[in-house]
Amino acid sequence: MGHSALNWLLLRRSLALATLLFVIFLLILLPFKIDREHQSFVSFVKTKQITPSYIELLGKSLSLHDIIDFNKSSLAPFQLDPTRLMLPQGVELSAEEAQVLRYFDYLYSSKKTNAEDIFLYVGLYRSDAVYFATPIPEDVKARLINDRTSTNEFCQSLHYCAKDATPESLADGIVLSIPYQDEVTGKVILSMASPITSSSDPNHFIGDVIADTAFMTSGFMRNKHVEWRNTDYGTELVITTDSLWAELTPEFLFYSMTNHLDNMTSLTYKISIFRFIVWNLPLWFLLSIVIFFVQININRFRKLRTERQRFSEAMLLDAFTRTYNKKVYETALFDVATKGHYAVICVDGDKIKTINDTYGHKLGDMAIMQIVDAMRGVFRENDLLIRTGGDEFVVILANCTFEPALVLAEHLRQAVAERQFLNVLTVSCGVADSQDYANFEAVLQAADKALYEDKKNKQGSRKLEATR
Image (cartoon, rainbow, N blue to C red; front, side, top):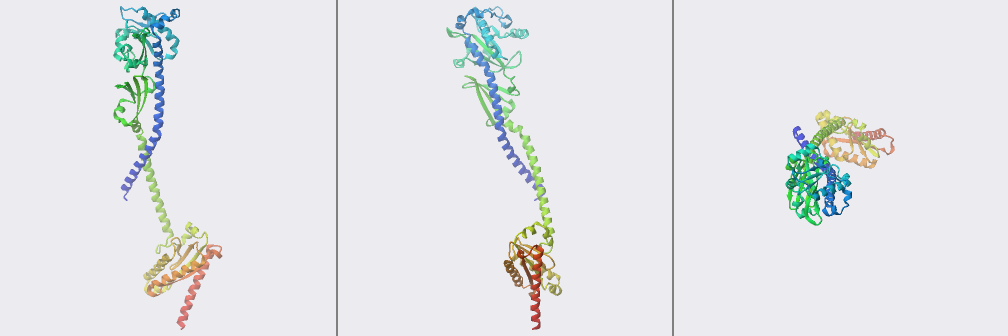
């Protein structure tokens, strides 16, 4: 495999593994991300729901019947504050409207600790008057007057006037506006209104108790986008991270959570899973690069280890016969082979010198390879075949006793003889095992002595034949 092809293969493997790890990372981290966002959303909604609950309480308390029956001496300290009243020029408050506003002051003063950070006021329909819970700066008041802001025009434009609301919307005593940008402060506001009614005629609306909250100033709403749409069930306010991601994200890659602000208005928070994936793509690139270079280094390490193994094996092998040389005695292979009960066979080629002198060294080398091939056919793969000289070999048989070794030695003699190489090639063998000897050197010496006896017996036989 070429170098470029190998790198391309490693790159593909790296991308595949990085993608798998990235998906696992997303599957693990995404639930934590969603849970954290859900907790933030729930906390945000709970905070904002303080306002509807508060103005609903005030609105339902502000009825003419309650005011008439109320101990008027309790209202004596609550005189109308001109700095908090916006009244169109030439218009005066009616007695019932003034009484409503004084009663509003009374109720608000007893519960104002529950309405912190809320811009709370009363809008009256007949006089178009606006009465604020707390004094407002003169410049803000002047601007509101100059802009001809009136209760009827303003609430009608934002669809939260109780007198114009549907019975379904008023069922829970709360009407919510759509989010809008305040002309004075520039903030995005959500107005919530509760009607002020006459107990003798519930359909007669005097005005509204209104609370404005800066919808986007919450820490939860930072860097978020809000849009609204009319549905079959009312108005749905949809919060997303920003408009761009809302457009880029397919619908199936949104995780949505919804909370109802009132019976006709729901607030939905849509988390873009696509945005979460894209924002974490650098991690995928980083994983791909790291895995790619790790694989390259692993591949280099394997190649180096293979080359070292080949080099080590080459150092242990005889160059001609590819059997082991004497260096194998210094390796773990030798230690394993001689750990338990083992046998040693010394092998020596017969008449190799005659073959060299008569036919040349080339055929002499071929004769040695005949012996090697015969040994490989007789002995096991895990037996150590060691060349100790020109035609001299030592075979170490692991987990083998003396008798099986004798049989194998005889099989080797027959295998070499059956080859009938030049009709002269045979081998002599000497066998010993480790049972009666303290170390390998003693076993080897005993096997070598047995080899000498085998050769001596063959030479005696030849002398006997010659005398005959």
